[in-house]
Length: 516
Image (cartoon, rainbow, N blue to C red; front, side, top):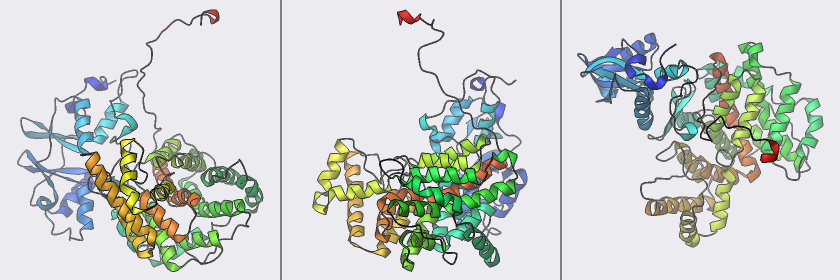
């Protein structure tokens, strides 16, 4: 067994020899070396001295620029003058260096010469092989900035205000593709050609219809409790449905069966949401239409009539832009449950529970409540200042990852402007006042509108009631959850972190009952 993690140094766990490149090589050559070695970076060297880093992030940035990889030079795309770490540095210090700066790789040097490279992967391996009973690597509360797994699904770059699905900008996909195209990209790893898209779309649409045995019990689900909460009803209905379909732990089935289950769950969730909503309103559910796209069918099942094309496209762009967003709380929940070998339905239902929290997905309607509370532009400054000074949360602003504008919010603001309406102009004014007043009252703490702020405006303008905002979010996020579920199952290790006990030191004698 290796030494305890806290006594180990970078030299004990670094990867060596290092995959290196020189500044004059092409990006294509560097990418080929990374792929062949199965690593996420190359160190750019001048002799034996590191002068730059070229990572997968740089490759994605380069690819999105539209440049020709054959001609692009490493020197033009590398991060110059990289931060380095000595081989005698302890692991905790190295981890802090990585997490504080948002890096994933650090060149390791000895007397200025490159001797290895340290990655988050190396640190995770070190944590796994520590002796039983020894302390785990120290991590921030909430796991902020801690890499808990490797993924090919996508990533979020908070400092840049950028996120992507696979190798494509998520905003570009939302603006240029249908939801079905992006769904295929996530499940199959590539954007579909015309034939693949037709086959994939037909397959999904055939799975939208609810089975008769579930339809028979949905009215009771829709009327449970003193208040109808759509997301709670969805959790109950989905549990019943997955049970009736015979979902079992994924470790007892094949990858093909697991993916088929994922498709069925994502295809039927919109139908479940709208059936439950209409039943609660005293209306009969509307049968899904196989001739309509995902978003158009969703709105049709809500109202019973076809929505204007602009409304359908607005909702489709919103849904496409919110499919995945890194290891957020609900996505991480889905992966944790999957790591135990549980069935796909259990993982999705658990993720729905996480999404229901107001600090995660349960807040879009609260942004509208803030606008309603302010009422008119001339009251904005007093209301906002009072909220900030009293420590009240301003809903729809701030994000744990982004340190600049949320790209989803920028996209949705544009969609809202295209849809038009008095509410949009008011929302833009309030956004500008919140940002300015926060700069004044909380200098150094930059807060911008997040996805929830303009999502609420778009969904309200389309006509959806506020109690359907979070369930609508769940429709798209389910596609992201199941993509992560399938990825977790393909290379699984149970997720079992450690906690730090801070209570009274044991062992304390147990007092007799009459002395307590």
